[in-house]
Length: 580
Image (cartoon, rainbow, N blue to C red):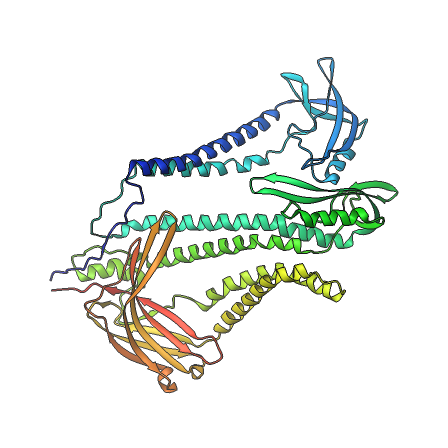
């Protein structure tokens, strides 16, 4: 007996590399920009990190603080600077320095500069770091090495530039030939899944970091400030600070005020707990003008650290800006979950991925089908592709995360209406976020109710089906089968093709065979039963490669009134047809 197998033919994709020299030159210039900018920032960061590390080797010398204060500089993004003057001796010679850190650009937070002035008061004996090659150069504290965490970021642009230039001039596209795709290509697909997982983690980590900075940390500070002491204060000055960036000019409120706590005078310029700046000059100008007109106002002082104070400790619409990073958190989480699910499914199906011609039918069965389903049997039970519990996990996590954060803003909205001072800007801004939250709750409830749906036990006989072969489908419903209004069972086969390009990939699905095996509204026919079917000889057997696969499945749909319907897919293997 000789076995002949059908080969599934695929064609390689055309390369996107431009054919003309002018086109290549244009693309090269584009990637040269990436390469040049990446190298420029990489050199800058590496130089700064190396310099900071080098200063760690400076000599430690005793010094005495001569003067210490906080200076206010007008027309500056960071108007408050810790001004210090100290003297020290090296080799019998006395030197003076006014440098706190090597990179000291001031601060937009008065309290931060004041804490340094309080720490290094005049007359204090402390230590400083002196350049052994130039004793007149000294600093009080070493600069942070946190910049080292960002050294590899510009290197990504360098790799993009090098890869793009190489691909433009040296990459050779594969010829358009028809060939059988073998399972060895799965290693690349597995790598792509890991790459997708890493890509999702980057989104998730970036979103989480920004959410913490712009949402979680300010809200934690705000709720801790509920116990701060209300203290009368006097407004000293007020201005709108402008901050220049690549995206344009942004603005922030700077109001300096003075207060007395525990018989000691303190100053602060913290308006609220939302750091950073944003567009919109006029709104911030109105806030500054409002406080400059006030003769008597109050601030809220931290009793554990009287230097910390704030003018506004209530939740305002500004904090809603911190909700936007949650989009990156959700996208990253979805990508990671999808990648993990994809890897698990691929691992489960790997044994029936591509196929190689075998010399006997039993050889194909033992090398492929048996590894996937176990020892050969006359009947095999099929498992659903999506378990109800797995379908509930992601909606539950996303719903709890989203609504947990949104609830703080909703509470503030209701508090405003309760006190008769509603914040309409915050109210209108929160409407779409609340609607999304309500949608997630409905999603969770729907998936939770689906846990109590009738469960289907599906089996096919024989365990090994081939093209042109006859089979028998058996089903049994566990649970309340009487709730089902209509039951439909179909035999389907589809082809999935993954098209990739420079911007991503997309999957096209085409159903090339569908046959209704059962459609009934009779309850006695739903509980259990069996039906015969035939795999058409002219179709294609099960197949899976890097960019395409053939999937045979039993689709079950149960219509349940006023309840989530049952929609499950049970995939199985169809082998090539043996020919004598």
